[in-house]
Length: 445
Image (cartoon, rainbow, N blue to C red):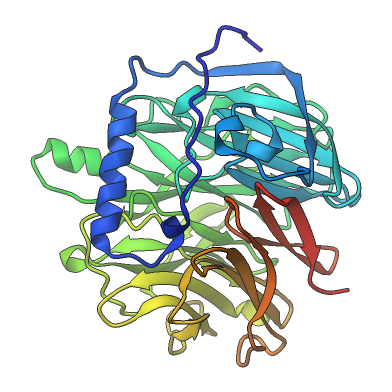
């Protein structure tokens, strides 16, 4: 690793009210503050990476004490902004995280209780994209191949580049990061999926169409949803497909790829008059070339969240048995506010009435959903003024009925968004906090 890279900028620990259900004024303030941070940069970032991974601090699953934000000046797991897990075929855990401008990786053979020494895969200093809905992504197949995607800012106008890097030996060695799109305008918020033929799909928020419209003098909001795929593990990518020209520019994309039939994208689309409601879109590989066909954009619910700024809060989607779609989202719309769930039995053409999640009197955020057979799980985050906690509901009948909500874990410190992953029939909640460390909690036996 080049030792002359810029000194990383220590990220602030988000205060508790960051997770509150606040209105458009707060979102605008945060957007302006973030823009100011980028504008202070003195030079454009240089892409810094290493073909030979550099050994750094030992990553431990649970720090012995709370981590003071002022002490978080390393790339150790204890200082992570976001941590993303991958359970491999042999049951080992690869944990990917970002901290102080670095993309880091460590391996655990005891489900996150302890980790091997961490490896730095890339370093971008203060230009690494670690926004509220941004996280480095990781996916793998049953042969030990691993693919990672992350984004960093190229300039002071939030224009970003997605990099990908790969391993063919279960994460022991990685290629150098390379751009997903050559000579792109801006790409952020990668989302990954893999099908039964080991084809890897990448979806992201792309800005080329919006830039083209603005160059014509057309005032255009947001970004676009784009997708492509690789069938040779990122040695090459097929031409990208723009599936929706207008979406939120800084909300995560949900993706789930089933074993049969089309797969699903969930994202925050921009509808007429600047309304930013959750949408779902099915994507079908077509013919011998597996060209991607984007089906019609389906509005999950008419929340009517009209805002000129990005909510930084995208939806999630999961595909269950018989292609049942489960989706969860956050809204501050005129018609409903809070977290909601809906299901569809016809590839998203119709959805059930939105079902409220959590306590409407609490500060709820960051819902996630996972399906396995006829079972489904959803988790979300709650803040009570002191503690952030993860809450869970479970369905064993394809989302028709749900268990009462149950508290899974809590913290009084900074915490990542809760995630759900599955492996060999077992389902886990993945959650990182700076006080308690990383935890992978089994939900079934």
